[in-house]
Image (tube, rainbow, N blue to C red; front, side, top):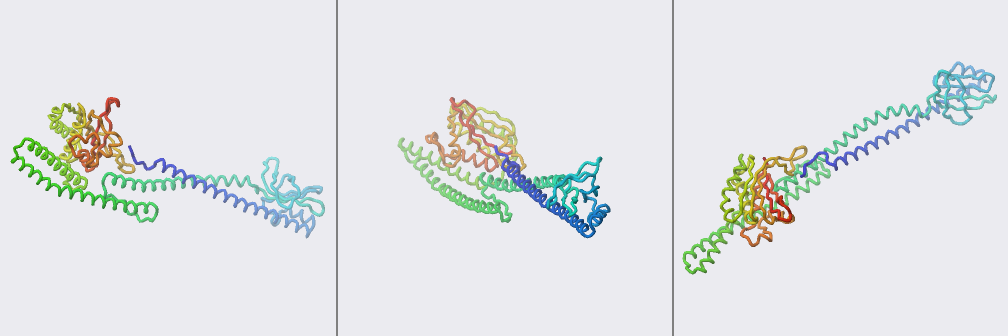
Length: 467
């Protein structure tokens, strides 16, 4: 049983793939941005350290160590930044600015990460500093606090976490929207194809003119549907015309046989003419049935649908066929549950009659006619819409049944299976039932009976009509 779902496994996989791709792309963009921002901050800090060092060296060159010491103590110029720390060591008394202890740092041309000690009651913090040797032998250390990656990573992690949450929400929403849109458009195509498969050759996909792949598929499917519709219409027209045109010759043939029957006295000739008359009547009935099926499939009949109780209709047909069943030595049993549908009583009666007649021909000793409500069908109702409840009219026999591979052919017009070629009929009974089912939006299902395989299950023919 097929029930369309808006979020099928394929759509869920697609949504997950889109979500993962968007999440990965967002993460890649965030980490790329982190690297760029970290590089900018690091470069700015290095430049700041070097600028302060250069200012201090310039002061030293102009006024010597006293001017340099005075600038360190008073924090003048660029050294006045509270995040900048300075240490002048190597003399009798080290000079410290914004420091509790001079960091251990080797002389190098570029600033390096260090741990800055501000005081005994204050935890050490990270920083970046450079050390240089003055001409008088003292060492000048210049640095800036909070310049390493760990503090930046902590702040960036907070911002990145919020960004990822937003990215996850947006990725989920966009993936679900994409999945629902693809599902909606594919189900629209599937629903139209299902209508076409049920015989509605006028079904077409709505023109969206979006210019995408779905629109191209819609255009090609509509062209295919128009071509098939035209071919089927032409074939039906030819078949109907042939069947209609043959009715007059068959009627004249029957009249000629009737005339011959009145004038012939020879018993052998009378028997031959009588057989010819029966064959002519059978041919006329086949033509009438073929025309009726064509009208049913083409919708060229008056709408006579009204609320009917299938149990009562089935009971009337059982009473009609009971004498024929007794004459054939077959027991016709009924199990009728009341169920009301909106249908054409005459057409439904003919469909039941064809099913009973088929069971009496090909069954063995027992035929069971039943009606029941509340069965779900595999009819495609549309996304988010449950399939309609279907009422059932079932005819079960205990004959040889129909092989699974032959059931599709059994409902075609003028098709007679191998076990039916020696029996009277034109191969139109099940085709008529099929046409009645499609006219009402239902279906005809052929299946095995419930009996054991070794004993011959028989055929279970079920006509389903929407409630």
